[in-house]
Amino acid sequence: MYGTDFGPDDAAGTGPRPPAPDEPLNAADAGIFDDLLEHDLRIEPRDEMPEAYRSTLVRQIAQHAHSEIIGMQPEGNWITRAPSLRRKAILIAKVQDEAGHGLYLYSAAETLGVDRADLLDRLHRGTQKYSTIFNYPTLTWADVGAIGWLVDGAAIMNQVPLCRCSYGPYARAMIRVCKEESFHQRQGFELLWTMCRGTDAQKAMAQDALDRWWWPALMMFGPPDTGEAATGGHTAQSMAWGIKRFSNDDLRQRFVDMTVPQAEKLGLRMPDPDLAWNAESGHWEHGPIDWGEFRRVLGGDGACNAQRLAHRVRAHEDGAWVREAAVAYAAKHADGRSRRRGSAA
Ligand SMILES: [Fe+2]
Ligand SMILES: [Fe+2]
Image (cartoon, rainbow, N blue to C red; front, side):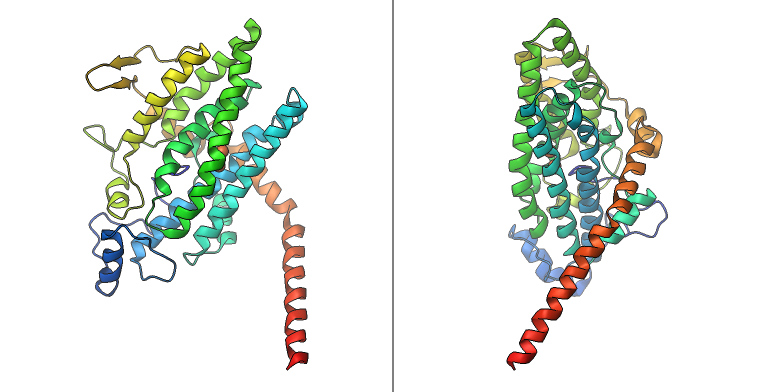
């Protein structure tokens, strides 16, 4: 999630149906669709597409959009407690960016014929998921840095290949999103860099944040989908459709290879006794990931699942008057335009 896709869409079974890996395309659609894919061209909303391709995209884009807006909460928690005006301004801008990412993505999903009110309803009923990472608490100010460095860093790893996704509106949304994620990642690293050069207590706080966020960040890429450890999922079909360009495991490995040297620069220790450089493969090898924890948090048993969802529902209900006012304002202007056209005629 957060740019990768797995799991059923809707526990109640009312959502778009996940595709069967060997599902044949509708013969009438297959020609143009296959042609576009074969030439690495973009599928646009006007193009015929297999229903399973459409429903896969709806599920992935919705999960991604939900992750962006739920992701505002852990850091939003620190806006009033940021240690300086500069840090507060940066954090407000970052959290606001995440709201914008959600809006681009709900708009992209709507080009596939779904309604964002319906997607939000599924999020609120708990039948559509968001990234498990946002069900962990932000206990100290260093967590804001760890989220930027690790969570936004992992998001970039997932999202940069999505700029080449076969579905045009999703790919184009990702171009701007990735530019902003890059700023998010740098601000997180710079925050920790400053703390690591502060007092012993500040450096210890940075280390504690890394200890708590490292493993959940590795889980953001989703369960293993290559080799003997592969647990099924949608990877093969999504790659055939040009939605996904790299496996979960490849992306996770890239993230580990990028992040280990950055931790060294910070002077922090990775919380993984098995982490080792493999000179032969040219990669950092990490220890086993606790997928039991991942499944527990995904299933609703994380530290903050209930709190995140309750807060989201409350914010949505409190914002009802804004949505109603926007609709009334748009209707009033549409009325005025049609009256002006009528009198001109
Ligand atoms: Fe984002
Ligand atoms: Fe971000």
